[in-house]
Length: 176
Image 1 (cartoon, rainbow, N blue to C red):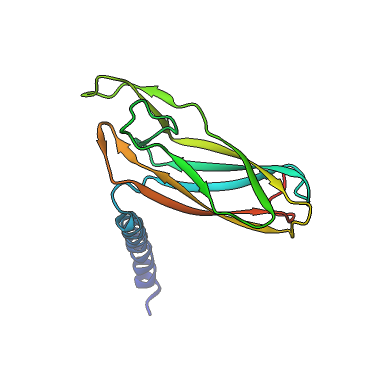
Image 2: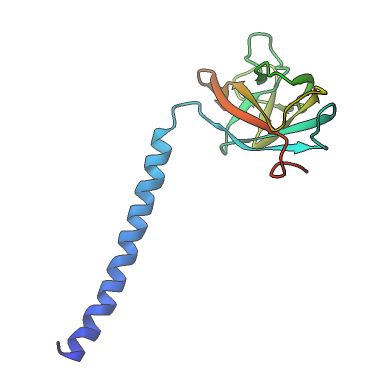
């Protein structure tokens, strides 16, 4: 092949590959977003275990929740009785007792069209769960949990959703 022709083809190929790669990645992002259903605005960032997880001891499981930009959920203590609160429910698990669940304070937000300000969570928030481990607890323990919430954008709210998660207590990976 003529060296001059080869030099002309390669730069053109490089220029055409980059737009194709960008186009393919934008389709992948659009497909991932399309799989979400309306109102699925919350995701689990992580569950962090604080304290020494050992049989007979207490630990705190910190559930880090992330909300999509421009979304909010009602706090655990909504400003109106007919609003749906954000609630974390843990499944009964042998060897562990839930002592307390501490929700963050809601942020007061005025929404156009509503007379009373809302008590909401926005962006990222944390729920702290105090766990007491039985003296005979076999570690590591996996505690299934569900975060129930109703996501809203401004005054528009969607059907309530449930986010399933597991809290793993014990082991080196989640100790802090």
